[in-house]
Structures are given as structure tokens and as C-alpha cells.
Length: 322
Ligand code: ADP
Ligand code: MG
Figure 1 (cartoon, helix red, strand yellow):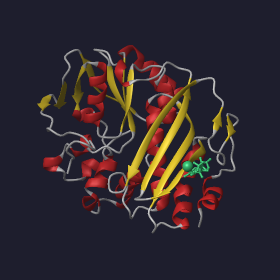
Figure 2 (tube, helix red, strand yellow):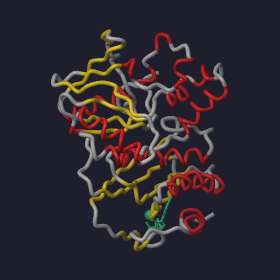
Figure 3 (cartoon, helix red, strand yellow):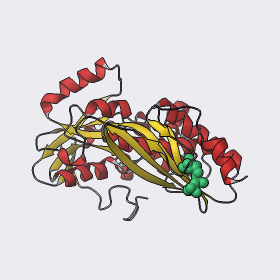
Figure 4 (cartoon, protein in one colour):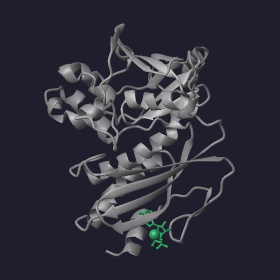
């Protein structure tokens, strides 16, 4: 295999977008845009974001999904992707083809076009840069205000169980067990939800590193605090079936859920749920707490104050949860 033929065979797309004046094949791509552009980049490495025994298609899907989730959290529409692949010699062309199958399945679903990238030999690292568009005021981490309600989409915990406690899953009903593994491998970026939330919310973030840490990021950026009601956080149904005992906080710390966490004025809750209903979006919205003026994060479980562990989320450069 050589680089040019791999690019032609696996990365060049047959689909198009009117705003892509020049795609893959030259020294750079050329885009046309009138809107504000929203950009993010994420790299995935083995044993941090995926496991070597995940299928290449699963890795391709997840790599794109986690990137799209960042654009969703900004309330923008993802449009263009760039893909950098560092591949060790043992990875063959069949792996690339399968990886791209997973990548393309999700790209197609959201009309995201791969417009360029890079291919090098090295340890397996996948980097994706996504650009989205928006005409709305951006949805930032820094906009939360005292009195805001804190909401989340969907439910959390399943991906963390599948990553950290896969052995426990074998005791579960097959459908619950498969649903957990599916959440880890195939998270659904909340793009449609983010676009609607942008019309009503003050602040938002995607829950990639656990609800404690991601909420804390919103609080720090907004210079506010919060009361989080752990008993109200929407946990995946599998969590109730698992004997977590001492590590019952795992679902709040594990991450990889890619749900959205956001804050809004309480008067905006009903209009938001009406907008969801009108758009036919069935993703549940759950109120999990309140933004406060004092800048600390207070957690309650059925009214009882719960102390946060010293390390309460996934931080690549800090200590990590076991
Ligand atoms: P150069 O040497 O000028 O950087 P390359 O040979 O790396 O060019 O790339 C040629 C074309 O193929 C460029 O348009 C580049 O964006 C695209 N490309 C290379 N690798 C990838 C990839 N992994 N995914 C998508 N496009 C790629
Ligand atoms: Mg290059």
C-alpha cells in the first residue's frame, strides 16, 4: 500500500457539500462560509479512549462521535471533518477500510464531510478536527447564573460500567448488558438537542469526563456554584441492577456518556420541553440541581450532603479513577 492510493481509496468521499469548494486531494481544502465557525479537535489513544480489541469500525465511529459531541455542546451544526491517523505497521488496509466504515456511517447521518487530513506511521493515534457553523449566540460554559436550573439530556453511567466494570456486566440480563456496551462503543452525539437547547440555555457542556467534573468546569467558567441532587440524576437502568456498593459514585465520575449538561432560567424549562416535543425529539430532559452564588459544588443524596471524593472525574493529567 502507498499513501496516495490509500487516500484515494479510503478517504476521498463520493458525497459533496455545496460549501466545500475543494475537498481532499490538494495541499489544503477550501470552504465557503458566512456563518460563525465553531472548531474543535480531539485525539484518541488506545487504552484511554478505546481498546485494541474494539473493532476498527467501532473505533472510527467513537472517534467521530466524541468530536461531534463537542460541537453539539456549543449548540452548533457540525459540517466538516479533518482526520489525522498515526498508524503502526501492523495495521493493514483492511483495518483502515473498516475504520472508515464506522466513521462514515456517523458522518453521513449528520451530513459531515471529510475534507482532509494526514497519514503517518507511528503509534496508533487518531485525531479529528471538526468545524461547525452557527448563527446563534454561542452556548458557552461561562454563562450559568445563580438561580438557574441544571438539566441533563438522556442518562449516564452505562458507558462507565462497560469501561471500568465490564466483569460485573456479565451478571446482567443480556439486553441491559448489550445496551451498556452499546453506549460505550456507539454514543449518540446530542446534536439536534444542542441546537434547540442553544435557544433557551445560559451555559452547556457535554458530559465526557463524568458529571461531577464537567459540571465543575461550568461552575469554574461561570464563577458560580451548584447544588447537585444525585438522586435526581438520570442513571442508566443498568446501574440499578449492579452491586456497586462502595463505588456507587462511579456513574457520576466515569464519563464517556456524551450527554449534554446545561443551565437555564426556570422560566425557560417549559418552552424548552415544548420545543423538544414540536421537533419530535424524545430524548428525556431531567432537572438535576440548581446554580448558586457561593462557588462550591454541593452534592445531596435524598437531602443528605455527600462529600465528593478528592478525585472525582477523568483527567488525563491528574490522578485517574480506578
Ligand atoms: P501534503 O503532503 O501536501 O501534506 P498529503 O499527501 O498528506 O499532502 O495529503 C494529500 C491529500 O490527502 C490532502 O488533501 C490531505 O488533506 C488528504 N489526506 C491525507 N490523509 C488524510 C486522511 N487521513 N483523511 C482525509 N484526508 C487525508
Ligand atoms: Mg500531509
